[in-house]
Length: 410
Image (cartoon, rainbow, N blue to C red; front, top):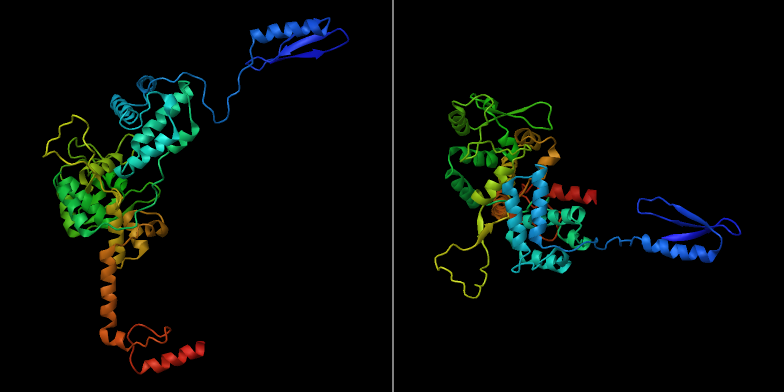
């Protein structure tokens, strides 16, 4: 944008702002007419830059998703920030969900909020938001680095919902038995790991960090928790002590106790997280549920004995369902929360209390114990007119004294 600046009766200057922020000047001109004609010529040479709206699209030509993903993969592989296997997974997932069968977005310019909302509603019961997070990361990179059209509202809609809230329901005993049965199919190592999570309430990463020298044949295990200065030592059951002794026999002192069943590598990834075990539990140990059958496409032939589509059942959560079950059992056995924190490796008691859960079976057991403690005669003898009277059984001679105390309190 250019403008005129008068600096005297016959002194006119032209000034304009360049893209780099500098403001050059040209002149002087003897009259305003000469300066105006020169101003028009300068504006043709330096057209003003169009301002982009705050939430509007970036300038650029929308490209097909295949080309965008290839460019994204090339930049990530050049920086060594991702492996070729992850690139193939990203590309396969993004091209699938942007194809005609799901979102039907040929290019990046077709991204819209309605399509994202419909996709989330369609796949809400599938149990994972990872494909949408893949698309979100590539879409953000394409807008910032590859100058692609960008819809901020659609980008916000792609954000997966938070999942920090623990499930309310506790895993039933028969479901836990199925998890341990599937774990035994992968060997003694995986079987002992799943049983320890359900017995002592360990974190997955705490169990993955255990090494051979942490086990004491006397029947104790040392937990090295990251946020604690001193390691924690707690006792093991006699059965687990015997099984751990057989498991660590012949291992080096720094060798991990729990390893993967196929590669014999520890359950930790490059960042030191227990993500491999979480993924393994989700697809190998966690209970599965049937998905609704999709109608066949025109001309598609399906075998009648084919395996029905399934997905992990997330009603009780992932691998932390075993941890939640172990902590709840310790609390039901009468162990105080401070001792539970020493066993599980938590820093405070409030962190342990978050995992206290119940289910229908345990509520029925509690009511049965309550009825047995009261007894049938005591329940029948309790007067219904005064709700302030105690509901538990009391001797007959103490009831008048109890009523006099209530009158005195009133």
